[in-house]
Image (cartoon, rainbow, N blue to C red):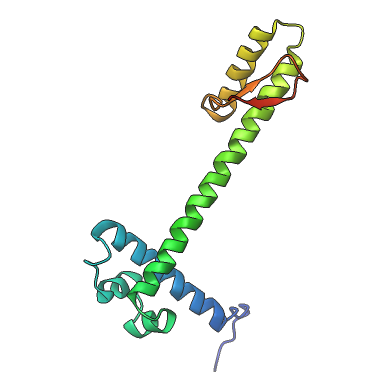
Length: 148
């Protein structure tokens, strides 16, 4: 007698998903090894062992180790670009918070308002606003200007 279970069948991963996972594993492993030992000191066998894939999988995804290095470099550049974009967004949020604080404290002297805005914005993100941004009380309260 056979027993049947009511568990739903798992969705199979597509070939594209498996290929992308292999490529990502190779890039991540190569990135760690290249950073620790340098490109010339890392054999392809060490990369595939670290990634948990076969040597054939490496050469299916990349023409050679140099092509893998190019992919690692692209990943590093994308990571740097993402971090920079996050920092720019955080700086914009700090500047926006400083402008909001400045509007709320309009009855206070411009110097005190600017100081209060700086203290308020530093509490928002845990650090002081960037040195190139400051409120300009002589114009509209929300304006943030770059120092020259």
